[in-house]
Image 1 (cartoon, rainbow, N blue to C red):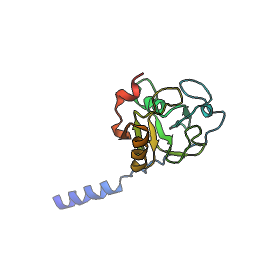
Image 2 (cartoon, rainbow, N blue to C red):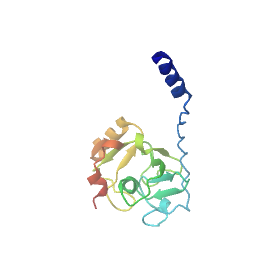
Image 3 (cartoon, one colour):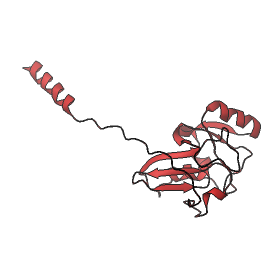
Image 4 (cartoon, rainbow, N blue to C red):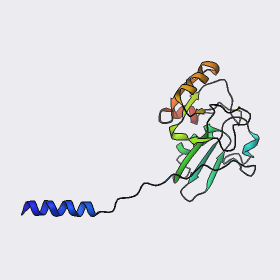
Length: 160
């Protein structure tokens, strides 16, 4: 009897519908129409790496700095229906213009904090790289410390 119940239980469990993985939306191309979420200024006119957050309703939020992008995710006042976070990969990008389509997954990037580089809003910047080695080379040249996304100190991002 118990064997049949166990078998029935296994059959019922295997018949349960599995939730398909949610596909991350693709990064959007940065255009002159993009306004910074916090400052409402035209994003392309700012130097340094930028960020974009795509919400689950497909709304794209633009940021003039990576630091502001990450700060958005940490703020309890901001929406939490985030589908994707992208930042410019600064590996081969010029500081003055990192590119319109040069985006990497923010959660997979490596960041240099505390470098000599100043971000789009004239504040310290979290400089993103697609590879840890490239971030380390940048840190040797410009100063700073390398962090994975999950290890970025919240105090650094949320400080003035």
